[in-house]
Each structure stands twice: as C-alpha cells, then as structure tokens.
Picture 1 (cartoon, helix red, strand yellow):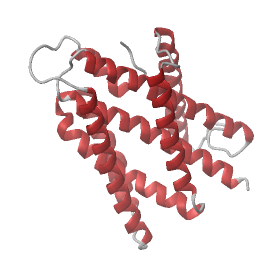
Picture 2: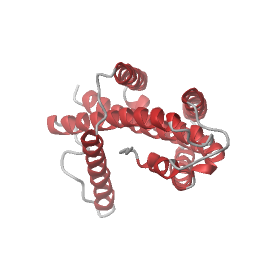
Picture 3: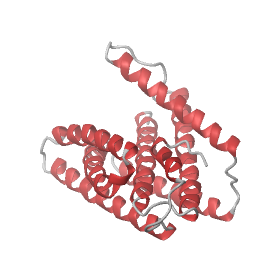
Picture 4: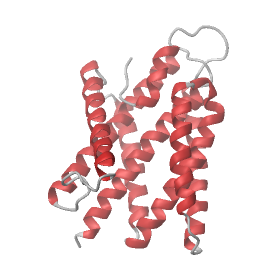
Length: 242
C-alpha cells in the first residue's frame, strides 16, 4: 500500500496495529465531512470580514503559516490528529476564505465555479473508483507520486526564485502554455484523490487505529484544498484573457 499524498505516508506505519478501537470506512467519511464543514465555516467567516471592508491579510497569513505548522504536526504525529486536524481545518479555512474573497473581487462568480468544479471532480472520481473503472496498481501509484513530487519541486523552485525577483516561465502566466500547465497540475491533484480513496479503504479493511479516521479526513482535506486552489488559479487565468 503506497500513496502519493505525503499526508498519508504515516498510514504505512500503522499497518501492524493490533487491539483497541479500529478505523472504519464510515467513520473516516464522517470525520472528512466534519472537517470540510469546519473549513467552510472558517472560510465563510473570513470572507464575511473581507466583504465588510476589513483587512483580512493578517488572517490569511496566520491561516497559511499556522495551517502549514499543524499540517506538519498532523503528518508526523497521526495520534494527535483528533485535535490537530480540526485546528488545521480552521486555519486553512482562514487562508482559503481570504484568497477566495480576493479572486471574487477580481472575477465575479469565479469562486462558485471553482467550488462546483472541485465537488464535481471529487464525486465523479469517487463514483469511478467505486465502480472499479480505475485500477490502483503499483505503477499507477508510482506515476502519481512522481508527478506530485515534480509539481512540489516546481512550486518550491518558483518560491525560491521569487524571493530574488525571478519568475518561472509560463507557470503563473495566462498564456496557452500557462493554462495547459494548470490543467496538468489539476489532473495530478485529482489523481491523488483516487489514491486517497484506495488507501483509506484498505486502511479501514486492515483495521488501523481509530484516530486514523481523523487522519484520513485531514489527508482528503489537504488534497481537496490543493485541487480547489489550482482550479481557482486556472479559472483566473482564463478570465484574465477575456
């Protein structure tokens, strides 16, 4: 069992678990929806303040930095996920709400489009996965893992170069190549959802400890946020060309 999602790596360390309450598939589903609800409420609150004319930049910074910190804590300490995962959802919601309000001020209706597309991709891939049309093989896992690491490295290089005033060609541009790059990244993010579904299903079947339900919800939330932000960026590129 392998996954491209870095937040699910600790699942592999829990396969030898024995005794105590065990993770269930429905338990993971319930925790996932609860964390998503927390994120939406947090994002909506930040958006409300932005709509009132308040400066939400500090909230976004706290959300981004705090979210990263708690994401790392959750990733390396899965047993703490019942506490850290909800905190991550609140903090990440602050960031997502702020950046969504920003894009909404530039392009009317873009946020709703991004939300609908994200949910459509999620439900579509879930149905396809459950139907067995997508087979999660070792080669599939390795391919998605390599592609995900490649995207991570490109963004890391872009961030470092940006500190020196240098930008990676096409990555943030609204040109045809820039749009194609965004589409490719969205496909990679979406395929991570398939691996998440597969890993969670097998984790429940093998009886991982109960706290991994929160960890599973956290991992799905990480992928969904990534997918949503990439879709938002793609739509902004397309809108800026009109």
